[in-house]
Structure formats: structure tokens, C-alpha cells
Image (cartoon, rainbow, N blue to C red; front, side, top):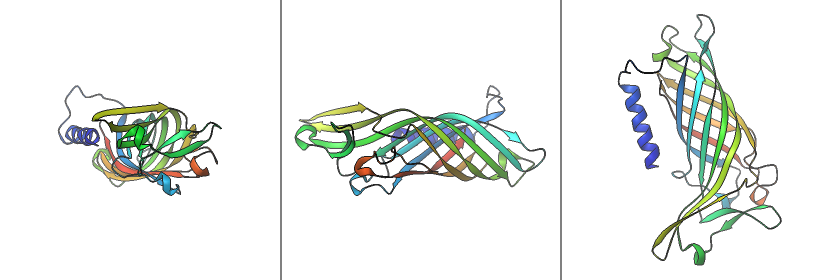
Length: 230
């Protein structure tokens, strides 16, 4: 969380102060999103915490304006990183039969658990349609954004940080955990100038149908702040 706040403060400083002559003159923008992930229809054993379930996305968006209208289209590409911080000292495990389970961490093995989470990284293709309330100055205008994105899962792992006999240790295990290889969903936002709030709702399940823990059909949502760096 400290890292996300530091990045957010840095990006605000970039946006609020004048850009130097060496700033890139590109036909688009680099948009940074910092948010929180939530699960819908997940089993009680897979409850997640707010502060640890962070999202950090970086997208380059190209700008296409429709004539002199107040509407613009923004296709792009980028990286999305999601973390889901589990409550109740549990983690995802792959059982001998290949199924995925949500498993309590053994206190004998893990001692005092500090953090336990699932981390997933995606290659993403976002698409935004924007309506600008000031069509004469898009950069300073209030704008309404609707669209969506698709993503290809690049990697995923669980992470458990725990204290054992006075020593802090970290266990990372890479696995697909039967997560969907592709995700797609809708996204909307409202902002002014280069700062906005956004909401994302996944249209497909986080796990492959019926293969998640306890056969869950859980879906992901995300809410946060977005900043256009240039």
C-alpha cells in the first residue's frame, strides 16, 4: 500500500506542475490506474481484505477524435496487475486430483501469518469512448468515459508472508490455479483534465467454469483513481 501511495503522490506532482520541453509529444496518453479489487459471489472461506487487494494498471491509449465533435475514441494496450488479499489465514492450493482448494494455513508450519494473497498479471487491450463537456479543450474538460478491456493472463502466484521463530519468511508458489486465461469486462469513469475515478466489472468468471475453490463462480470488480501522465 505504501508503494501505491508513493506512486500516486508522484503522479499527482507530474500532473499538477508544468511539463518540461522534453516531455514526450505523442498522439496519445499513458494512463495509470491505482485501485482496489473486490470479489462477487465468492465463498465465505475466500473473503478478501480491502487494503491488501490492490490493482495497478498502466495503459497507453491512442486518441481518435470524431471531426470537431465532443466525442473521442481511445484504443490501447498495457499491463494490468491484480492482488487479492485473503482474510482468515488461507491460501489457494492445488490438490492431488488437480482441483483448486482454499486451504487454511497450518500454524505449525507458518507460525504467525502477516499476509496471504493471490497475484495475477495480464496483458491488456482497453478501449474507451469519451464524451468531453468542453469540446474546445479536451485536456482541461470534464469527461465521461465508457468502454471495456480484454486481458490475457501472463502469470499468477500465491504469496504468504509469515513470521516463524522470529524470522520473517515469504513463500511464493506459481501456478495457473485454474484462473481463466482470458478476462473481459466493462469499464466506466468520470474525470476532469487528466484525473478521473473508474469502475471495472468483469463479465467472465475469475476461475474457469466450476474449477475454482468450492466450485465458485466468483466475479471480479475494481474501483480506483486514474491519472494520465502525459
